[in-house]
Length: 420
Image (tube, rainbow, N blue to C red; front, top):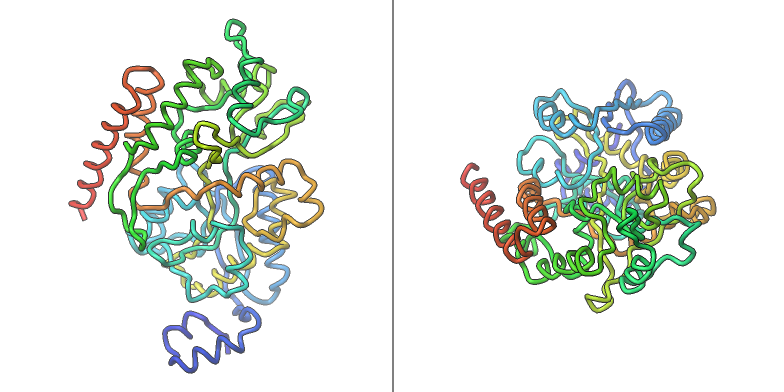
């Protein structure tokens, strides 16, 4: 008889449940004839690596359930999940970042909680903070698959010793900046709030205050720590003059490829844009001299494997998610997909440990923090983007702009609560 963790939890008595946990030594055999559909938004080598992982699952489970991966265009992905899954026309398993988690859970009928599935050895296979990203209101809703966070990316031909502190960074940038020729020793898209979060978190700031259960208490956009972080940014931009004006992603990429900026703050997605012939290094973001030596703490985006609440094959979908977080698959995704797996064991593999890119981003994970997965996260982007534009363009002080953003966000949250 097929062993089902879900049925065990729902049907068995307490004694039977305890006995089952003691004898459970291996994942259940998966029923024949089932086909699992997995949605993702991967492309290029990342997609090829993921397809290889799915093929491996199917080969190891010949005669049992089989998996089929379906790529979905990223721009339409979130809306497609929101529309298709509740109607039962979506996948059995899907991969997405944790920032949408709270909203989808509050909407209902989209993501299945999986606390009752997860064995201790599975919980322990991940890097620190990864399970936190998959947890909402003290329940676990997914297994972390891979992560991304911004780090310091530098041209190794120009930078032999990457700066470890902001004091060292600013000193180096001043010596390598000539605004008249369009050269800046250091650049990043600092007007994008996602990038600024590293500085905000480093100063001890944040966007929301929550209680112990993860329930939203109130927004804290205009906290003193947040204001200080923006004042520091403007000091680098205006007083020190080491950052370019209007730093779009395209501009930062162009500056780096043309040798006009040798250090950038960006994530793994930047690597595919680097010109051939440039040897890059990756190191953690510098510590903040201006905040007592605290590290910059970029947001970490964690992509989770989520079981659809409408799947007719939930047990099998979890087993696929479990397989996709194993050491074997993590190595494929790291070396062939050039991604950062959440599996901690894989970073001890010699081929990965000696890879300067993978190990560099792995080092940054030590101080990165998961992006909040609260249901109200989607309401934050508009007021914070408006605030950043005003601050960077000098039309409002950091305190003024953040006070306005606080009012806008508080009003939007109040309206959302009234509509429920």
